[in-house]
Amino acid sequence: MNAPAAPAAASPGSPPLSRLLELTADAVQAVLAGRSLTEVLAACPPPARPGTQALAFAVLRRWGCANAARELLAPRTPPPAVDALLTSALALLWPSDAPPYPDHTLVDQAVNAARRKVPAAAGFINAVLRRFIRERPAIVAQAGHSVLGAWNHPTWWVERLRHDWPTQWQALLNQAQQHPPMVLRVNSRRISRADYQQRLAAAGLAARPADGAGHEQALVLHQPCPVDRLPGFAQGEVSVQDLAAQRAAPLLLGSGLPAGARVLDACAAPGGKTAHLLELAPQIDLLALDADSTRLARVDETLRRLGLAGPQVQTRAADARQVAQWWDGQPFDAILLDAPCTASGIVRRHPDIRWLRRPDDVRALAQTQAELLLALWPLLKPGGRLLYATCSIFRAEGAEQIDAFLQRQGPDAARLDPDSPGHLLPLADNAGTDPEAALADGFFYALLHKP
Image (cartoon, rainbow, N blue to C red; front, side, top):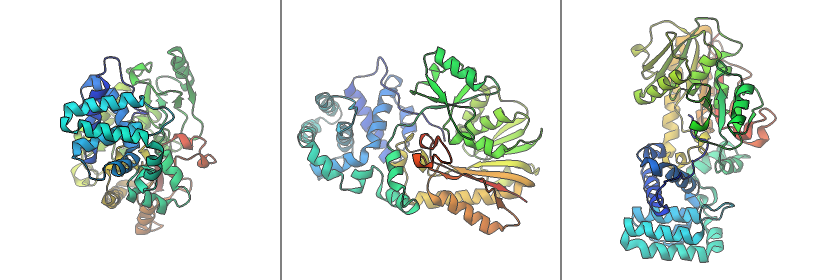
């Protein structure tokens, strides 16, 4: 999964703050009801979208502590629309190094939003917010005693990380609160990384090359920017892709594949890894599948923009598990299985994920992953390789999944490459194996060989 590196700032012509707070409260309420923030923002009026995204990102990162504070200030839960607006304002008033607005401005605009949205609650919201400002240190300290207040993640999520990573769980939760960098992947078929870095500099955008294996095409921007500011983006010279995601194509291709080698990208949308495979190995025949035809259209768009579409590349809407519906009977030399997962490794880019997921989702997704592995493994040639990937840091979707698969297959039928990265945790203390680890998203990779 790819995502914007950071929320965009409010643009010129953006609606007033009170209107942005209304839209933010609506977006947060929708997320808590089970809708993705990406989907909600897509329906947001275009002039208000950047500002709403910026506020919604900030609110969702602090929803746990803001909700704990609201429970202290107003123990009886208000109606959902009032609760969403009040708690969003509390999240934006939470102590930070760079407050988005002065306290009095935020309170005034939240009250104005309430007068339009729920007039009867305007006085209540005004009183609660002003009390929070007066008693902020004490309320912040009290709210921090709850799991939600301390970690801004659901309790089950915190407990799962504590179980999976007993010495690193706190650092992982802290890292999820950080703003991620914007990382570019230079299309080496169009331009070298060094030349593109010079193009960025000429456009007033500072960037540095990323270090480490699998990052040979990567540039890390010093400051995120809209993609339309990237020189040559529309012409296919560059893509936006996290450092961890950029490791997939080099891992699968290894030392190279012969011309005409058959490669399957089993869950291809939105197409970043598909495109990277073709940038590095234009001689392969590639089939890109995705069960969602709408998302598959993004793969086609990406390939056209990058100049990678051609007769050797096919895209098809299909569930990879339903092999009889799409497979032509010819085995593959290599398979990329970027499996559906909880996306627990990319919550800093998608802060809504932690509130959308439920404990049962881990078990259900792990079952889907196991079904995909079992369905696709027979399609691989002897001597072929399959790269299993998830953007998750939960062990059930990574090491435990692959351990179970290898036990089912037996050592004569499947072998784990000794250089498989395994779990990539976005922490600085992993710098011994990956100097850019703290900048990258959380991922899991297992490279499997068929004897």
